[in-house]
Image 1 (cartoon, rainbow, N blue to C red):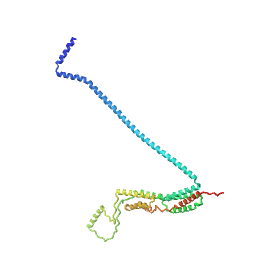
Image 2: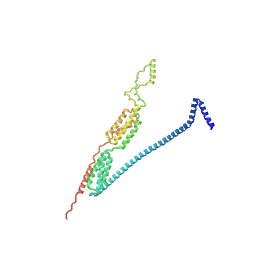
Image 3: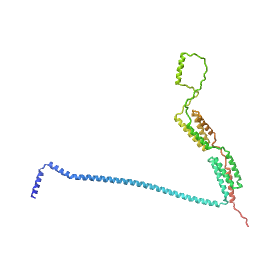
Image 4: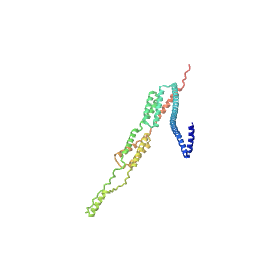
Length: 362
């Protein structure tokens, strides 16, 4: 105990004996010794915080993606629900219309069954009236005289099944209309369209530019008195002969047209294709003026630009000239007389059937 007390003053004396610099250095060393463990812990804590933030960010990003996917799926589900609702409404509307139509059909059938005199002849007359009306529409709107003839023949067969002597006047008028309609010149629309297509296919095979210039007309040689050539004449003739092998001069009465450039050649072919297609459309629609105008324009281009005269070019011209002479829109006769007579007869029968029957008094 006494020794410790003695050592303590000694230590104080030793510390008092140290210089201020040594004392400051000793304090820094002690502070650094205590700071090393605390800085390591701070770094570890910072790393843990960074790792935690990264993990939280990754989890948040995944959650964001999942939320976006859920939002997209919810939108798609809403759209599907809307579509299903619309389809259900359409289906309900369709079923409602079908129910209404079925009721109307049942009511019409009941009314027809309750009509007086609704027998087989009435049905045949109604069918014949429908066929005659259809034939008039086919001829007037579509200008299909062949279809109109077929329908008129069918209507005549239906009228024959009635075996009604009152129909005789209607059938006589119908026979006249068939005869006048059959006298109309037939137009082979299918054949004409096929020939125009064949001409259109040959347009690209035509030669529009000459491979060689036309030969000059032969010069008639006249006999001249024989003259003995001199040395200068022989020299000049040899010189002219040599030049003639390099330069050739031809004399033509008419100026040759300039050959078509490749672009002009292409556009000319395309224009001719368009004109021939326009002629086909006019042919099907039976527009005679447009049909002939299209073919005439094509022929003008052939005459103006076809510098090569060969078999293909002449064949195309002959075909177009033949087709241009066709009358694709002939005048059709009036065939409504039989329809009007049949309607008058049907009205008379309805009035007779509707008259009340008076019974005599007993």
